[in-house]
Amino acid sequence: MKKTISLIIVLLFSIMICACSTSNESKTYDSFSLSQELPVYASEAKYMVDIHKPEAIVGWGDYVFVAKIEKELRTEYKASAGLPRTYYSITVIENLKGELQTDRPIEFFKHGGVNREGKSISLLEGDSLLEPGKYYLLVAASEKDGSLGQGLPNASILLDFDNTDQLSSSPIIEEYKQHIENEIKCDRERYKSVYEAA
Image (cartoon, rainbow, N blue to C red):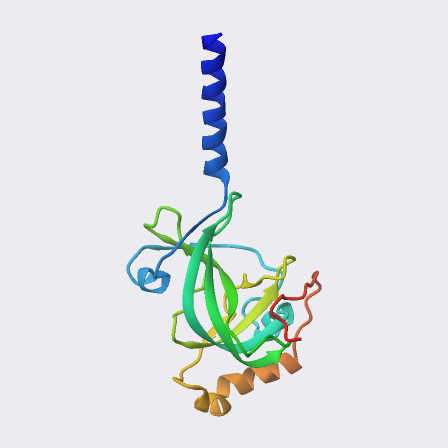
């Protein structure tokens, strides 16, 4: 009887360890600063669109917008294989395609970030992490659950200004308005973000 009880306890303990090791996990880092110090490993991938054509990238996206990166929130690690996801609080300043809320910060993620052990960074080849406090032009897609994210390189364009007064004179924004007018449509399933304006 004692052997049976001991065996059951050992089995239950093993199941708990396995469940913990395969569950989702999140950690908090200053990922942008760490990306200047830690080794960065680029992950090659095949994409639905030509990532070297802005018209194809905006055609893939559900939303194209200018945003300020307020702060990094966390890095999540899924139980299944794949890159970490780095989550940010952002404020949308101007919508160029689609209508996201502009009256409050929203959550946005990028595929890639500090790896689980905290000693290296994995990113999509050609991609980079976002710097809090800076303005970017972002191309994003909604996931099935309504979350808003980015899974393509060349879809985050750092804007060279410090405040929104310089927004109207940005040649990059004007250029991307043209790319949106001439976008190459991407045939994929699309979802509505929970952060769409009402």
